[in-house]
Length: 327
Image (cartoon, rainbow, N blue to C red):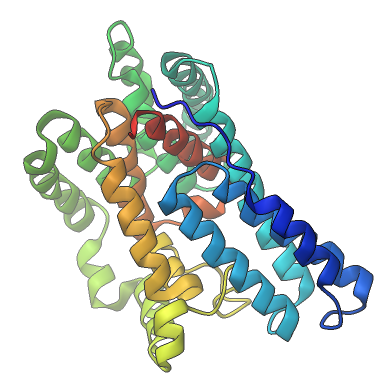
């Protein structure tokens, strides 16, 4: 396990930035308050001495400063985005540097997944969608697909007998594909990940109407193509996106893909940083956690699990646990 002493060298400079900021917001006091938040956000990401995590934090912090100073986005949008990502980073840091064992976290994840599975089963039994308390079948499916790997341990396998049937009852392609991909990676690494495309594709095309989706039966592909047209309209948006927290086409919902959403918000730079982070994550020595990371990545192809609090918290916890094994 990696032991990290927090790096606080940025904060003295942050004090200077806060004191000298002014003249480009609603008033000097509001500006200094926002700058304090941005400085704290940036310092939090830099404190772990992790160059990938730190690069992401600095990049996003610079974007927040630009959005606020130029008023390209409503202050409320900036505040909401920086709060959610900041609290996510707090959870990640606590988990990564914490003393609770990985098994302790995994057991709690199983317990939560079992409760949600029971609620989802009873909902389905009474003629309702299997959503439990997560509001949508896709989100319950994502939570269960990720949580299932916590059962890949001695004397924990039998809990899959409840979790996996409810995952099936969610009738959602992205979570099913995510579980297949994670299981393939767990047992046979990259070869298994490639083989997992077979059952994942079979479910999508044969049981979930995938042919109709491809032929225009799903609005998601229209959303993605619309976002792509906007992103590629300028070299600047291709490079750095439209900014963190900036919604795609307000009023039309989410993009239903974390990877498309990342390209929308942070462009090529954001995709590269995320790619480097997850490539490193898959080299961890813990097979269960790397399987979870694969499940998160695959589910994110067709789901916005990082934009709903339960699944986002679960994914961030898994990242923090996995990064304990990164040297």
